[in-house]
Length: 356
Image (cartoon, rainbow, N blue to C red; front, side, top):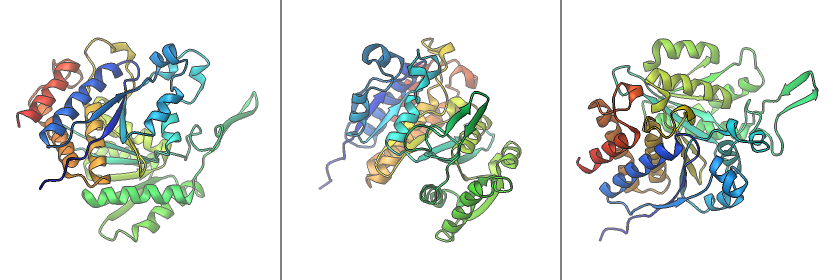
């Protein structure tokens, strides 16, 4: 007798700008994938967030949203435009950062894979809770302050537990991929902080003898990525370096519009495209939903591995294969040289799953 398929409750947070267009495209594709994989239908839970939530709830991240997220298996987070929020909301920690901090989503996994012949296929594993990001590296308040009006100080935080867990996350991923891990740091100048990051990653390497390990300074790494991105597999680094490198890698792969990501802890995961809210094209059916769809596929993959659920893992692979097949067939949005609108492209990917 076949076991009853595992069911999941996943949140939908549309966000701002193009979010209300690209998130539904991801939902359509994920629904098609779980059905084709023989999994139980996803129970979707819409939740308020962003500018619309400010109008209806007086907060870009209402307390009820945070409370409900804690009851779910994961969620899709659309991009937000916190820079455009009215004060005092603009001055607060943005919704994405607040959610990551609240749930300790310490691993930000950002793949960069080209859909053409560029040859880029790598993953940036970004430590997501401390480092040089002042909004996340303290228990209360931030690590950025001004003792006088003419002096600004930013504090970076590096701890052994945080480095060990992100290193293991990166090594486990490298083991599943091409068994090559690159540690990125600035240990020649930031000897104590990023020097410790490199040293602890090298310690953890002893647990993974099958993985080849090398390391580069952050400035040199940007050059290596531009010149020979195809030579890299998994890259692990601290928060800010990872943010910068993953944007560069996404563009080298073809466009930030195709750059997915997932933010995860051992208990929860949040699918979130690496790009912003693109308010200049919002509501025009022009946005590329590839990154959001790919992020949804990554969430399914995370659920499959965490819950030992072959159906979720199969659904994730169906999303990945359908995205690749659809774009390679010439059906894509304008930023990739095609003519498809946001909704049309999402439907095409879903159709590629159901007709496979």
